[in-house]
Image (cartoon, rainbow, N blue to C red):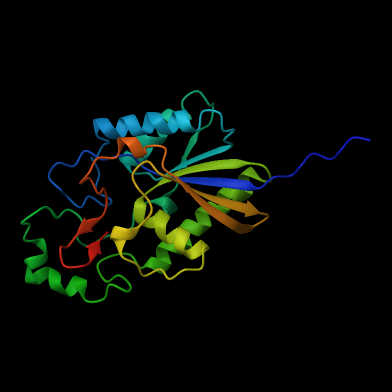
Length: 228
């Protein structure tokens, strides 16, 4: 008598895009025209190597350029269309387009002070609860589409990935952005049984490509808090 095939967990790998070419220190958010740096392209190739033997059944990307450039080498040769999903886009941010570099005056400008009034929401951008809701919708939809034993991959952004993880683990959404475990080119994997997340794991296949001082989407205010 043949044994029934073993049913394994459903896996949804959520990848943070590679390093972005941003020498001026612009908080780019959802702005168009921000591409991967040379190092970021190397990260995308490394991610393609990391997933080379993984039987991915669904590929999803944020519509932003840096995310699409990151998923392109992963998708190459797989015969899968990359689905662009607005639900996994970067969080909106009212500081978008301003420069945050050493000696920047952005946070000294009184016109910006009102935006900092409530970091619990946060007041300068899309509420954390709203980001979690849309990310979890996208992650759960991916899990349902690939089914038992299936694996999906989504390319998104630091803040959405991190709060999605916090929400899945039942932790508080309010956090210090400098302490997020979500480097550029990292992989946060959500494990499912049925329609329920049963675990979250984390990997950094691009760790040796990380450059000191390149923080990606997180901007330190220099006063004990960060903006992202």
